[in-house]
Length: 135
Image 1 (cartoon, rainbow, N blue to C red):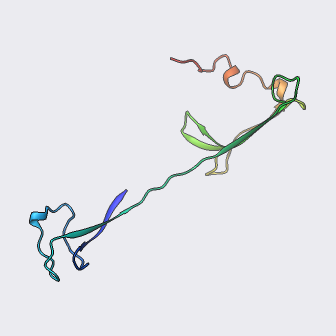
Image 2 (cartoon, rainbow, N blue to C red):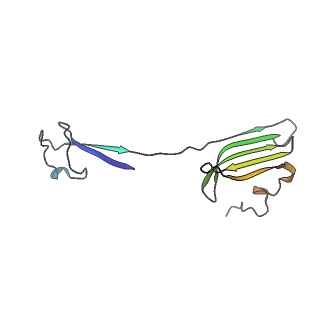
Image 3 (cartoon, helix red, strand yellow):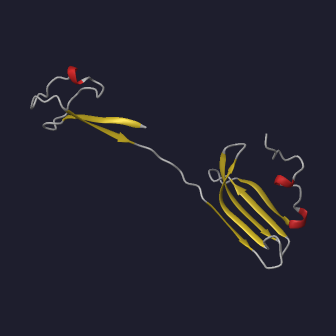
């Protein structure tokens, strides 16, 4: 968003009440010094939001998959466009899967899952109905 704050005379700095779009040939001389040179000041506002997520994996020699995985931070729910707070742990040594998804604006828990990892099947891309095909 850009807004014009003010116009002043470039010669003496006196405030001038005329639009910035006015052609030079149509400008009236400054009442203080007679100059038609102007200084235009614009104020620019913008904002952005940063979302972060951190993950880690613990690997052990002789194991194909990590024995422990963790993710914590903001995650975009693509279908709704909503950024949610995600906490996920996959603990293969203790056979545990934990996931909590919370709406950060309302504090509402959207998903809470704490189950045996061996019971956590057919989710995400492992789900036979998952639409993960390139078209």
